[in-house]
Amino acid sequence: MTPNSVVKLALIAVVAAALPALARGDSSNSPAGYDANLPLGIPREVWAYFIPKGNPVTAAKVELGRKLFFDPRMSADGNISCATCHDPARAFTDGKRVAEGIGGRTGARNSPTLLNSMFNASQFWDGRAGSLEEQAKMPLVNPDEMGNDSHEQVVARLAASPEYVKEFRDAFSAGPTIDLFARAIASFERSLVSGNSPLDRYLAGDVNALSDSARNGLMLFRSKARCGVCHSFNQAFAAFATFPFLTDMNYRNTGVAANYLEFDPLARQAMTAARDESGAARAELARRQRGSELGRFVVSGNVLDIGAFRTPSLRNVELTAPYFHDGSVATLADVVRFYVKGGIANATRDWQLEPVALDEGEQRDLVEFLKSLTSDDARRMTEATKSTTSVTKAN
Image (cartoon, rainbow, N blue to C red; front, side, top):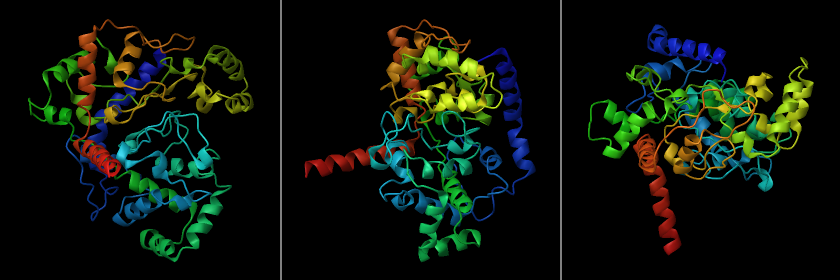
């Protein structure tokens, strides 16, 4: 991240501080009749602020979006649904290193959780979609995901279903279109709000909500471990209370892309391609094998974004392994060790990333704090699934 980005983050902090007042100024985005049932730790004003005026949430949209989300008929072969890569039993991830789609084809990126995704400044690891609505359309026609030749194919399937036609008319007073499909999916995803973690209860006054180890980890997170540089956590807790997702919503090169041994020459080619104002050279690089390791640069064309990926929220991070955009790290302990050593050096690594001196005990405490960010509801869902699986195997 560059010094200019620091200015950007300061502006983000100012905007975040103003969110409650802005939301109170226009509550029409959270219509009467829809109960968001928000958990502890998620301010209603923040949720309402992130509901777009062009797609207010209603119960009918959420229910239609839920049905579409789990329906494999949205894929070309009838086997892949949104839930294939975003399984509720895995905190809306898939537990795989990279996503697997139609015909067993694999993508280049790890499937991120959809819990609290409505609060992302943009979607995907590289931020190429500006909204949940925009994001919802893309996997449908990705040959490595749902494999449809066109959006029209999907709409034709929906239009051939009397049940779906009725539900679209109930939700939107119109028949199926790709834009209405996206609005329904996005509405469902805006219902996937996760909070009520031990940390939320601790901040609400329950001093016993965190173990001694997790409390030590909290202090390390806020101080010598320097986690808050990227995973924003205001020292006075004020910023966390306003935007409680432990992310700066920025894009950073921490060296994960350098797992690809040819990343440095690829980065040098990207620097040359950036001079082509038409974007053609950048697009050509992106199409190359492992070109996706260029990260945000493919979207922005800014050389400072080479190898940079979105800073994810840390809520429920215990449940969303494997980690990083390429799924290259299996455990939280390994994630902590990666950052203790300062990531992986490369020409465009974030200037704020540096090694930190944490002994083994401090690293364990930091992991315990990260586990305290797990929602009780999300944990119960995953544990119930594990129990069901165990009973099935035993029988």
